[in-house]
Amino acid sequence: MTPIRVLIVDDSAVVRKLLSDALGQEPDIRVVGGAADPFMARDLILKHNPDVITLDIEMPRMDGLSFLRRIMEHRPMPVIIVSSITQNGSAASVEALRLGAIDVIAKPGGPGSVGEVADAIKRRVRALHAGPKLQLQRLNPSKPPAIAARARSAGRYQGGVILVGASTGGTQAIEALLTRLPADVPPIVIVQHMPPLFTKAFADRLDRTCPMQVIESVGGEAIQPGVVYIAPGDRHLVIERHGLKLMTALRDGPPVHYQKPAVDVLFHSAARLQGVPMVAALLTGMGQDGADGMVALRQAGALTLAEDEQSCVVFGMPKEAIARGGACGVVTLFEMPDMILDGMNRLCHASRQTSLVGS
Image (tube, rainbow, N blue to C red):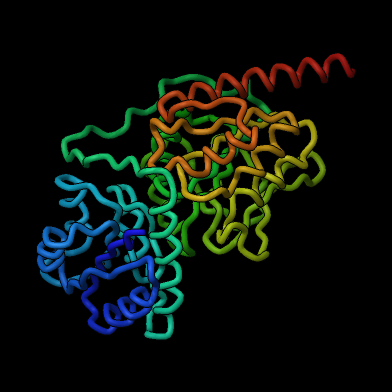
């Protein structure tokens, strides 16, 4: 098997050496070089044609975001952001994901954390190599912003809940989905694989660009229409019933499928609810998180939608859900908003009819 070629771009010589040593011990990974800045990285890309680049954000001569923008405009390739856990670093990393980076790994700081970072990089690059081919889009700087959803009332969806799970490529997919839904949409609960603090920056960005309110969940919220709840990094997010209210809650359990938050934890919690119209969407991502939860939701009567390979950055998680029989439908990201709202309308109408018959 041909080794996976990795280029490390970081202004710290210590970090480059430690990461190179850790990754270079693996027989299926070959570090083809280390660059202290984007100008050195550009020459090494031309020379070695790496399969994956790890990229720091804060670097001399040209920052990581500017370099990533140039990569995605002229030569799209898998880029993993390795960024410091700071408020500025987190916001920049979320912007990097919007520009086309496939994943972000938190760099806690200090040589002692490099082993943890190296292990995370190994899992990512192996999953990229073993999984379906990435559908990387060339960045178009003149592309207009997403068009907001046409006005439509969501009042007829009273009592329903929308669930969304995503991983690699999910930040772009989630933004595209939410900007095409109405402001008074039913409550939406989302798990996007992302480190702590980065999820707050992600929620803040969505809150500025989407028609509805978007928050990072702190647990204990009564879920309300017109509000999107993002699972915080390193905490599992679940939905529980308290009397007549549905509430969010956070859990500190172990990672599921190497993920915390995990889509499966959210989906399984929702599948245990009774009498709640639910639509679940499993979007782009590596691995199998969410697939079993989709099966449980479908068995519980929810409408379950898997993103089609055509629009996925990585057709991993949706593919697993489809293979296990968890998807009622397979649709492109462009079709997803209308499918969600139409499905929710049918489920809420059926729920009201059942209530009338029961009374």
